[in-house]
Image 1 (cartoon, protein in one colour):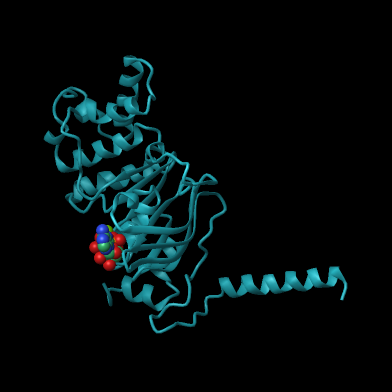
Image 2 (tube, helix red, strand yellow; image 1 turned 90 degrees about the vertical axis):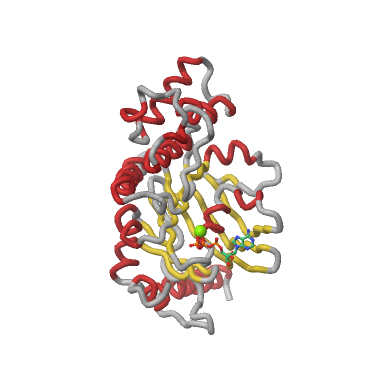
Length: 294
Ligand SMILES: Nc1ncnc2c1ncn2[C@@H]1O[C@H](COP(=O)(O)OP(=O)(O)OP(=O)(O)O)[C@@H](O)[C@H]1O
Ligand SMILES: [Mg+2]
């Protein structure tokens, strides 16, 4: 057989492989899982994750997860409690490094750079990939210092005037400036819960991140503060990539363009948010979104 013929055959075989990958017909194993359904890749990725596994000692918490996160995209991660959403989110800025006995394998790249490279310094990484937690956690310092701290330690501002400018701009982007501009020296912990969460978002923004990770950022907030954060997420996506873990399917539907559904450490299905919520392919996704499970 000629080389050309062999290559043509290989191409056909690869195309067939791709077709099989994108096929919606799923053969389930005993866990109801036969590989992620949907396209895990995006045209313009900011982060690329391949075959990510996470272990806490013997516990296999994330199993062979591959997923891209696009630029200017809000990706929501949903699934029942304990399925590994927070664990996977923490992989994206190496927060799992801080947990004893936690081991991560696979590849995760930010703008083409392997973030698990042994030579990589995690301090600038955690500025590039910022994190907002479930419970607002302002530093026990003034509102001003909460925002100024990061730019100062990362050497982002050369002068006090530049620092003031960063503080103001970050608070403006987080939609908090008007509420706090006259009380910058008061403690951040004295703000309301919703204001504190916007302060934490402003703190993440202040160090010019590319990606903002949010782990159930509204679960401690009332509906009005939640709506304010959701509006903010929508505005922020023009400049940042956002990954949000949420237990609220309404929230995922409102804020995200893509949704990833996790179940017992597997990434079951990923797709356009509207498709996941109106026409899920996998039975496990359907059971979850229709409230039969979780
Ligand atoms: N520090 C840890 N040590 C040991 N096991 C852990 C640790 N953190 C999480 N796990 C386990 O890993 C699995 C995934 O947990 P994770 O917190 O990522 O789930 P989750 O989807 O975020 O859940 P929730 O919706 O309740 O926040 C669970 O079985 C959990 O018990
Ligand atoms: Mg969690």
